[in-house]
Length: 495
Picture 1 (tube, rainbow, N blue to C red):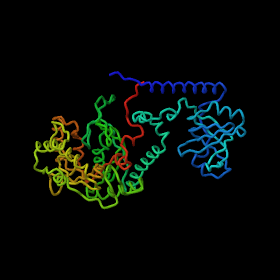
Picture 2: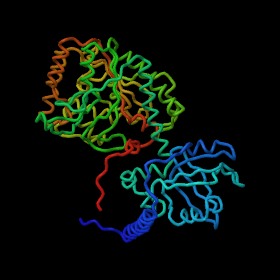
Picture 3: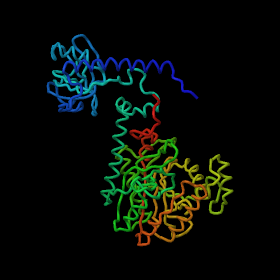
Picture 4: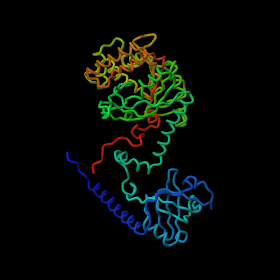
């Protein structure tokens, strides 16, 4: 189907191009007059916020982007914005001189970046301002800001031109400051708990540590196909445990070639920690402490009304719920006895989509994801079947179950941990099962990693591991994960 461009779109584009032509002419004129429109440095001494805090009469030197411009004869009021905020600046003809005032009025536009020097004063309406004595152009903008026309209303356009979205929306900028605080708080917590921050490979010859479809590439120098990692190491940190490290964590990017939703992206930030001589019970205690501390630090509260759930209180003691018992209570299905056909029939009854090639483990996972949507939490989901936990240690009480937990809050899974499987024979058998699932068409089943099994044969101490992604931040910020990425992947624009 041929794409049609509306008359309004054509008009907007023409208006922007006309404005660009006018600004380009101003740029050329400035250069002809020997005025450099893009100097290397701006000698500012204060931020806008710092300048606002100074008392009347203090001399300041600030730089930023011109956001408004209101001419009133021999005086012009503007707002200058830097990362710290905005402050009003006033240009008086008799302060800056007739020629300088004329130059500013005629050749400087909204969106230009300038340096101003002058004295602090307060207007009769009480607005903190700067009376400009000197000014200098630092960067000539050739395009107008979006609100001059229709703004950035379309979501795809906002994400594609994210720099403009961030420039115009102080709340959005604050969201990313808060996100940085989120990761800093996690890092600071783990460092204080004695964990060592490490880096493990992003490029792998086999994917491990999760069940997900990978991105495939080719390594030219080694002439072999490789994968972008689908987990934050997982099998690599366990090698570090074999090597003698006892408490490690990593924060980095990982990649999954899967669908986009409110809670899923293809590349995102993940944290995983590994702790030797500890089990999943120790992990749950540490994780509950970490979540409470980090969420309180970042969001200022532990109580939320979110995703349709009321009065979610992270401050209370987190309970444990049993995987099989919860599914039986919510669906009437005893998964320990149910056949594949019975599980498929239940999924069909609940209108949950599944693929014909999927076997019991994958079908159970789909059934659980449907049921968790009605669980308020915060709770730890425990006693997962070994079928859905290929890297978790088997339960000491029931070998068909594993020592695994997931954090469930307001219908979403917000973290996953377990006692790590350190039996090389058991691991080999589970890799073999995953290989059969891949052969049957399950592209998300894990690939066998024989080198990892060899490392296990040298002895992996009892270890617990845990992982969370930036989905946790997006969840409590009540935003889609895509909105919480500075520059999410979007399709190229059509010119």
